[in-house]
Amino acid sequence: MKIGCVKEIKNNEFRVGLTPDNVKAYIAAGHHVYMEKGAGLGSGFTDNEYVDAGASLIDNAADVWHLVDMMVKVKEPLPEEYPLFHEGLILYTYLHLAADPEQTEALLKGKVKAVAYETIQETDRSLPCLAPMSQIAGRLSIQEGAKYLEKKFGGEGILLAGVPGTPKANVVILGGGTVGMNACKIAVGMGANVTILDVNLKRLEELDNMFGAHIQTLLSNDSNVERVLKDADLVIGSVLIPGGATPKLFKAKYLPEMKDGAVFVDVAIDQGGCGESSHVTTHDDPVYIRDGVVHYCVGNMPGAVPRTSTIALTNATLKYGLQIAAEGLEEASRRSKVIASGVNCYLGKLTNANVAAAHGWEYTALETLV
Image 1: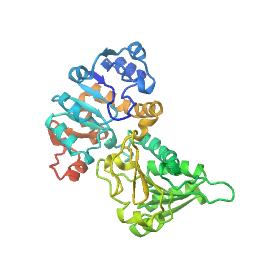
Image 2: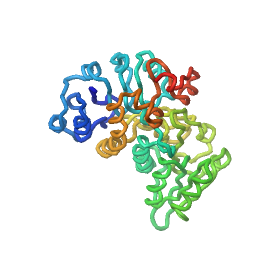
Image 3: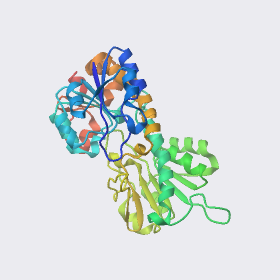
Image 4: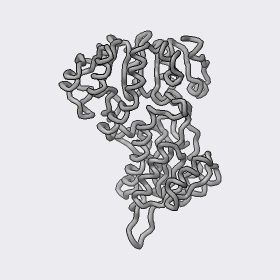
């Protein structure tokens, strides 16, 4: 199979879909790999490293798109890339279609076979290709939140951990999944007061056993969320429904009740966000203030640390990519429910139930098509 990888064009996105080691793995399996020149530079991988690994370098992205059977990326294609789709192309990347009807329509119209990292689900219900970026985003959320609590950025002007004789910051984490747990780990490590909320009592028990007296766990409901937000200095939104639109737990009506200069980091923004007051921002212009609360809603947070992110991501995605390339998407999907769970669009049909529900569009079960 002809495998391609192009440079990401999203704002300040420096990750790359394939490392030189990934290229070696595809080549060893008998495939051909075509890399756009300079695709890996943002993550610290040179063109020479890709050539040494066996890849063919192509001068421009359009030629790679037209040449390959499977395109391996990091972020969703942007509108300027939609005309480069061709029927039957396997697109293997993050898609986040529930928050992006325009992209969904383009993939369906282009009859692309779109496999989304974020919906690939193992038999234990874990999300292996989403997990590494969730880990990074969770840890970054505290790092970025602490920065935007500084007065020069519109924050309260407090130090997350405080110092002897001063109060520590109150950190509230909405959602106890991979993002929330990793945010909690960093916040506790920095010495903040941490409250974490989730709808799953078993998960709260796990977090309580993990962090003990260092955190407060609460059942996530409107009353508890509203109460803890009044004293919060930093709020992390980390709610996820695989492939689906994110529920709006952080309501606009809570903003006037919060402290002036409090910070809200909406890690779920690429799935539509868990805040009613959230809209996507970029690394170039990451924050805005509404009702006195600083909102940080960058849609590709891990892109800020591309070397770490690229290696972590490709460690997870390579296994499934090799299986798709070896067997073809149809056979791989028939053999593996895990691979099938990642297929969001197939030759003009929408094959993910959560995405279909988010848009109110027709859903077609993949097994009826392959």
